[in-house]
Length: 370
Ligand SMILES: Cc1ncc(COP(=O)(O)O)c(C=O)c1O
Image (spheres, rainbow, N blue to C red):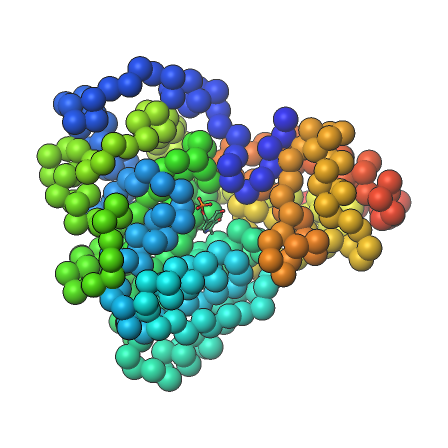
C-alpha cells in the first residue's frame, strides 16, 4: 500500500519493530535514561533550549495544552487562521473561555502580515497570537519568521504555534523566532505511529502559566515539569511509541536537519510539478505551497470521492480529501518523512490512468516534471 495521507505516514520497519520491545517500568532507571535522552534530542529538532514535554495524546491534546497552560478565561487572543486546523486552535481557546478574534484568511492563502499587524494595533489588550505553521488541510505553509517578527518583535505578545505538520520536515526555529509554545505530533514528519505529542514551553510561557486560570489536569505542564526532575512522566506514557521515538530521533539527527529540510523541499517541488504535468493545478500559489502535503485543485465535475475510492481499490494508493469548505474541491497527497520520488511517481501514474476514466482528459503533450 502506498499511504500518502498527510499523517499517519509510512513508518520504517525498523522503527515499527522497536515497538515490540517488552514493556518496562516507566518509573525505573532505564526509562529515566530514555526520557532524558529523547528530550534532549527533541530540543535539537525543535531548535530550542526551552522545556519540552512528551504527551501521550494526539496533536489536538497538545493544542489544548498550549492554550490551557498559558491563558485565563477572558483573555483576548488573535487566532490567525488559514484553514480548518487554525479554526480548531481558536475554537479550543473559545471553549476554555478566551475572547478570540478569529482573523481568518481565505483558504489556500497564507496569513497576511499587515492584517495581523492591524489586528494587534487595534487592541492593545491582546495577550497571545495563535497560528498554524503548516495548514495541512490547504497545503499552505505560513511565513512563521515574518509572523514572529510582528508578534514578538513589534508587539511582544505570547506566540503559540501549531507546528504539527511542519516540525521535523521544514525549518521551524523555535528560539530564534521567539515561539513561546510549539507543538507537534508523532504521526507526522517524525515517522512514528500516532499516540504522542510534543510541546515546547519557554520561560515566558511559564510566566503565563503562573497567571493562568484555565482548568487543567491531565495536560497541566507543571506536573510534567515536576516529574521530569526525577526522570519520570506524571502519568503512564505510551511506552511503545516512546521506544520507537528513541530510534527515530537517532535516525533523524544522524541524517541532520538541513538534509531533511532539503529532502522535503525537493519532494514537495517534484510533487507539484508532476501534478501540473497532468494538467491539474496546485491549490495554493507556489511560494506558499507546503513541502509536507500537496493540495490539488479538483477539476470541474470531477467526483473527488470516486477518484479517491478508485485509487484505493484499484491502485492501493491512499490519498486524502479536503475537509469543511474544501470537501470535494481538493484532494491531498502527503509527502512527509522518507517519501521517495518513486512513491510520488506511482501516484502520478495512477492518476494518469484514472482521471480519464472519470471524465478528465489529460493533455497529450507531456510536460516533464522539473
Ligand atoms: C496542522 C494540524 N493541526 C492539528 C492537527 C490535529 O492533530 P491530531 O489529529 O493528531 O489530533 C493536525 C492533524 O492532521 C494537523 O495537521
